[in-house]
Image (cartoon, rainbow, N blue to C red; front, side, top):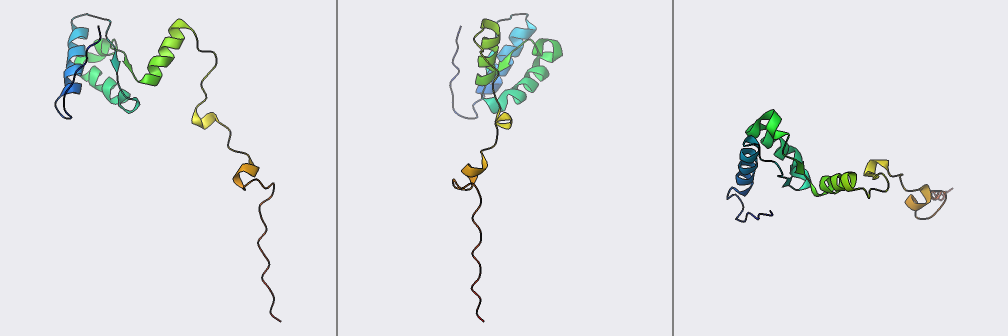
Length: 114
């Protein structure tokens, strides 16, 4: 079942959802997933461990959109290749950095006044 929790900023939506999922985990009910923005996964996982304990807290999957897609690909197939991170991409070639020239421009010689 999909449930939307609506409210203004600071009204307690996140804490409500964390406590709801922790209570379900402590009661032994499974089948819950918490979907959060990328930057909040670690914080949410820590909160789940604090609220439900180490065993039950780890039973609540916390996914960002990227991690959810990766989990679906792993489970259902469809992940054709490995995803390349920003650190794995090669840097642009030298001509692209120098404005298309193969060698950097030489400084102009100063005119001699003798």
